[in-house]
Amino acid sequence: MATGSLTIDLDALMRNWQALNRASGPNVESGAVVKADGYGLGAGRVAQALAQAGARRFFVAVAEEGAAVRQALGPGPEICVFSGHMPGDADMIRDLNLVPMLNSVEQLTGHMEALPGHPFGIQLDTGMNRLGMEPAEWAAVAEIALAAGPELIMSHLACADTPDDPMNARQLKVFRELTEGCGVPRSLSATGGILLGRNYHFEVTRPGVGIYGGDPFVEAAPVAYLSLPVIQTREVEPGESAGYGCTWTAGDTCRLATVAAGYADGLFRAMGNRGHMFHEGVPCPIVGRVSMDLITVDISHLSVIPEALEILGADQTVDDVADAAGTIGYEILTSLGQRYTRSYAGGPGA
Picture 1: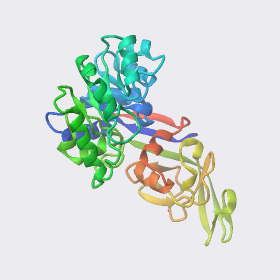
Picture 2: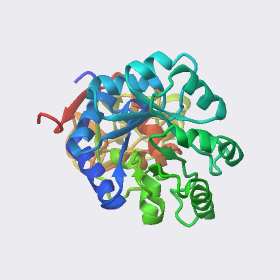
Picture 3: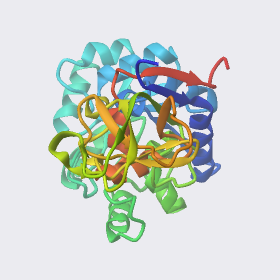
Picture 4: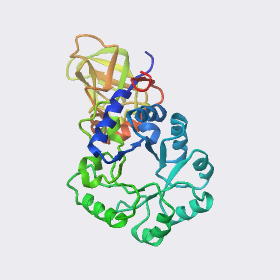
């Protein structure tokens, strides 16, 4: 094995979506967010599996991502584009039947001029100050926009991962005030919002990171399994160091394994002297700095020299790895490099 082995469990992915679909309630449609190449796991295969699980509405960040998902799914499923109708996107939006979530008066005007009668949605800013029409903008164009029949009106929660944050209730109140009686399906909640409860669900939810095994959906099954080959081992004596900068020094005689992966593969430098890998459920500490292509791991306590060590899987979630790297699970998933040998387990046709 010359490179790391990244296995994506599509059956687990489907089970996670189905669990969040059930949590959304019986009268709510659950879509699926597949942006950033399906959170780094391959948008085409991920979307096909989620369609088999029951998803019929998908969300991507930009039109180019929508093209990849449309190629994988074919006609039928709705593909919504969070960034809206950007300059130069008209042909792609029309030809691939994408649904831009219009974020401003300018986007609304441009869309209606370029593609009159083409489906669209509306994104409202309820306090996150990132994307969407602000309340005053919406008030100015709501009558015109609603008369054109949007497919969906959505907003995004800023603090859904922190259930007690008062921002959640404030955004919910604003969203209700802006959309009450609009007669259009509404969506406020991604994974965190789904877990906040029924008041946040409206007619459509947008499960994202929880599908892929990430927090805050703590009941999620692991989806990504990453195994890294051991390419060399060595005995290290007390007082000897390992890695750039000599940031780790052996206190006792120990055995180190060098594995073939590093920050070029999405395993962050900050994990040095903090993270762990696993062999058959046994944690093995990362020692020294993570370099571009190599990581050293203390395997002194193992009874065998392993052929590979696992860093993602049943023993360690993406959020566990993220904690060691000082980041979040989203960043770990979407940073997984292209040098891994990727394979898929389960899913359509399995």
